[in-house]
Structure formats: C-alpha cells, structure tokens
Length: 267
Image (cartoon, rainbow, N blue to C red; front, side, top):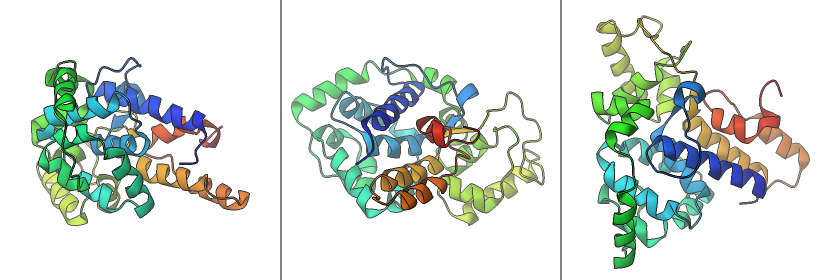
C-alpha cells in the first residue's frame, strides 16, 4: 500500500475510534454518531482489514467477533468482500492470516475462506481481551445499528431502519440497495412493508423522526472510496491521480472526508 504514512496512521486512528463506539476499549476518543454520523458495522470490518497491522487489533477484533457473532450481518459482509477488487482481497486475506482469527466462528471464517488454527496462547489472549470489551447494553447505546439489530434482527430491515434516521434522508430503492450491499428486491420488499405500516412516507422518509443523525460516518461508500484512494497513489501520472480523487464521493462518507480534508467539499 503506497499511501503516505500520515494517511495510513490517520485511517488507523479513526478506525480505532469507530471500534470504541462498538465496545473495544482502545485509548482513543469515541465516534459520537449523533455528531459524526452512523457507522455501518460490516463496512467498519472491511476498512479495518484493509489497514490492519499486527497489534492489539489482531486479538481484540477476534474477541469482538466471538462475543457479538449473533449481530453480525454475514450476508452483507460476504457481499462486500465478494465485490472487492482482487488486489485488495489479497491485502485483506494477508491481514487476516494471523492465527487469532482462527478462533472466530465458522460463519465468519467462511466469508473470507480462512483456515487459520489458533494457538493455545492466542486463544488465552483472546479470552483475556474479551473480558475488556464493553457490554452489549453499552454498545447498544452508542451504535444505532447494533441497537436496531437487537430490535429487528440482523437482516437488512434493521440496517435500513437505521439509515432512515438520517436527517433529510432521501434515497430510492436502488440507492439504498447499493448502500446496504443487497438486492434491489430485498430493499423494495422492506420499503413496501415500512410504507404500509406508516413508518415511512411515499418518499421513503420517516414520518416521525426525532433526534436525527447527520449522515453516515462510515459506510459501503467509504470502502469504495478507500479502494480509489489506495489505487490513486499507485499512479505515476499526476493526471490519472487527480482524476481518481475527483471520482471520490463524500456523500455517506465522513470518514474519508476527514481522511482527506484537502479534497473535501468547501476546502
């Protein structure tokens, strides 16, 4: 990865901040979703795997996956990984090729084709790190996606309900399907249900929306942007690099807006 060290360090810092929101006690500030925007859980996984180093993340993240395995949307995670360009798949697979990830549930390992077998020492370390994680009750107070998955299940209905809590939310079914990495038909069915029970109006906006969120801090758009950013740094041509950065959309992606402040709108 040819990104400048300052960019990689900034990305890793923000990724840790997002995991504090999800209950991993890194010594960094929490991402306050009410101020910064909603964190998509599976998009956070993908961003983490792109930038992960062999540090505490390698044991703390398996501990989180084991503890919270029942609220991970494995179908969405699989779709994100399947659509990942081959060169970035290799990076992700290499970064996951540490034996602590062999302790994760089979449902998670199948997504990435992991065959890792954990050592006894790794298993003991994961068990100790698991004791440091915040409780599910605490995480449900800081992450709206986790809260809604506890209310509505781990399918796409919960995540769709989460993103309809965004202020001035206006999207059609196809845009929502792309954002949530699922089929148009799945989103269309859920939208019909939510309109039928008067949860959404005909424009797919919440009829009663209290305490809205400002947008998405980290979403599937973030992952697409990260691919563009990583690829752009490999171009020798300044014109190609400039064109790649111009393709970056910061809508639904406050993460990359903070990662590349000089490229953000209004800078």
